[in-house]
Image 1 (cartoon, rainbow, N blue to C red):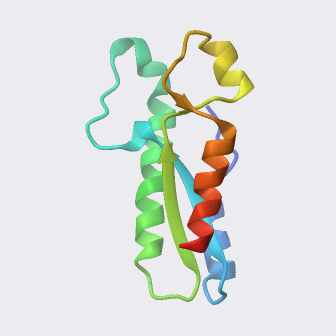
Image 2 (image 1 turned 120 degrees about the vertical axis):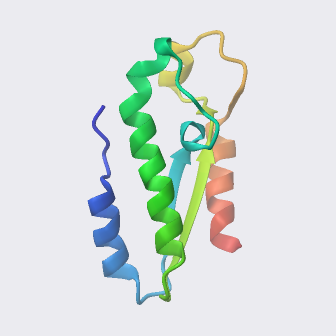
Length: 110
């Protein structure tokens, strides 16, 4: 699974904006939370899990650095995108795109 943003890219963005009043918001996943262990039928998610755990760690590490930029991290379980709902038609436990966007936008005003 190839990610659209690598941690190297996030570090470059941090270095670009660390002395500004910008807010950098990284969106993680429930799969990166403590206690989430992949079962054999989910081993195909291992690379995704590793990437999201690295993103979470990087986000918290950058947040703790002394700079004027603000680094925030938020995570969700499933978000009800068309692709997810098509892949999992019986999925019941998800948040809507509007809810996800509202939560992300809410971080700007905190």
